[in-house]
Image 1 (cartoon, rainbow over the protein chains, first blue to last red):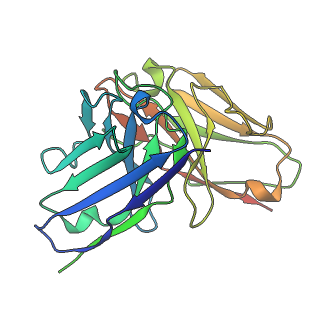
Image 2 (image 1 turned 45 degrees about the vertical axis):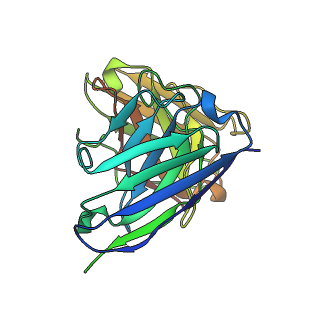
Amino acid sequence: EVHLLESGGGLGQPGRSLRLSCVASGFTFRTHAMSWVRQAPGKGLEWVSSISGSGGSKYYAGSVKGRFTISRDNSKSTLSLQMNSLRVEDTAVYYCAKEPDNGDYGPRSFDFWGQGTLVTVSS
Amino acid sequence: QSALTQPASVSGSPGQSITISCTGSSNDVGGYKYVSWYQQHPGKAPKLMIYEVNIRPSGVSDRFSGSKSGYTASLTISGLQAEDEADYYCSSYTSTSTHVFGTGTKVTVL
């Protein structure tokens, strides 16, 4: 059974940093691309970033490019999101999501999701 | 990348069929077969219902079906049930190798 467990959310100040993690189990982690998708309170889903199974290809939404960095450690089945220069508008629940393929050409769909971790950016 | 356009709400009575539209452009919905649909109940994580326009993952009811014509994709729920009441989001791969979600549709079972 696929299981994705996010952690690292909490209160962050504008301009500061937070790091999110997602530990995966139940599938061969290194053969699947992974993504982060966020949802601001009461709002819709927003794709944030994706990384291929090997980690060699990374993709970012324009709203976070240059501020967020996605990475993965296949030896630990862990996905990470380093969030720098936080803004109030980054406040959201951040979901870790698995993709059905290795993601060499970018994010196509998300077949399993974690329960999410809440990030609140406020002074 | 602008969000794909969905109706804010759709409603139907138990047993009826409803259809949710999702309109994009040639750079996303119209240009690729990688259109997906997600169901989200309040306070829960999204669940994949349809991928690659019309393919149901294992375990998803065959009451859910997808289609696409031009720049518009559609999700049809037939034999509407109380448990289908939720938010639904479409999404698509894009020409810049990114991903975009729809604005979301709240389905109400009357």
